[in-house]
Length: 399
Image 1 (cartoon, rainbow, N blue to C red):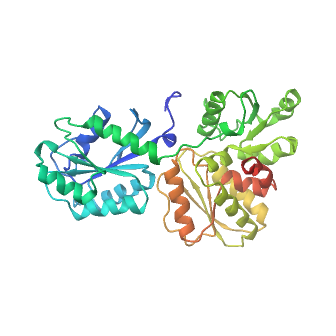
Image 2: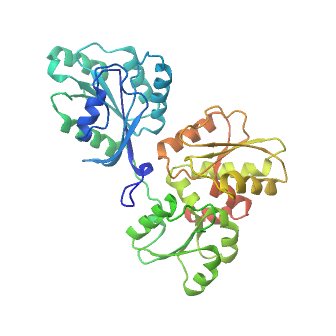
């Protein structure tokens, strides 16, 4: 990702779904103005979902998702259809592409039901408009609703701009943006960021949560001072910050040095609020006080990365949990886009901040846990609780 690009997790995710050879890939190429998807008359050309981060006017920064056919009956078809279904977990807005020259199918009706069930705003792009009679158009409108249907032709480039405008209007109406940190500071406030550079830190760059917080603070007109933990006392001697934000793994050290009258929080807690999971994660952290020997705890990360000695998820968190509880729970680990759906054997899920996951996917993971009666917290909130500073670290969000 370029330093000037909007992170994928902050972009609106627009999923294109449809039957094999409905013209889905051709339409997504027409919408984005480039060859994102491979177009072929061979059924099942699109296999794994393909994503493209781009600027889509009039929407803004988006991720377009091209998916395999929802009726794929090839040898690998079942797996492809399952992957297509999982794309709904991260889809903010959906476009169902149908071949308007034929009859509606049960697979298409089922996907509309899935959109409604998951409360995903959607449009139906009725493709091959140049081949559709007025009577056929009315049939499609009667089936899906006149407001939901947009008649287009990817081949003839008909009404593509109208489709993009409709996508933009639907996104604007249904996808809410919330601030990450800008509402917590005023222009001219000094914000002190504590960011350890140790063996687990990526070489030559800042991690994504730090980048995003710094960017939003700059836009809000705040004054930013960034230090490592051993420089904190020196920084506090030179200024009185309006807010201190720390990396979770040094929460205890930082709290001990920052005066009680200075608001203190962490990057991970900021992201919990940003993804809409904060208060569930606060409740989940308190479950750490009830852990027993043998309880299974899932530590989940949204990304995959090269792990070194002292990794916060694999090494530090288990050690801190053992110390806090005085027990010997059994730790399981998961990472990347595939989140374990059966959580019934776990006492608790401890998730990372989810900086690479969009809000839709984080909400899906939380909903899975809640449906199965499994509390879920995140790294920063769990660490704050184990250090006895959780109440202090969330005060700023309660005012």
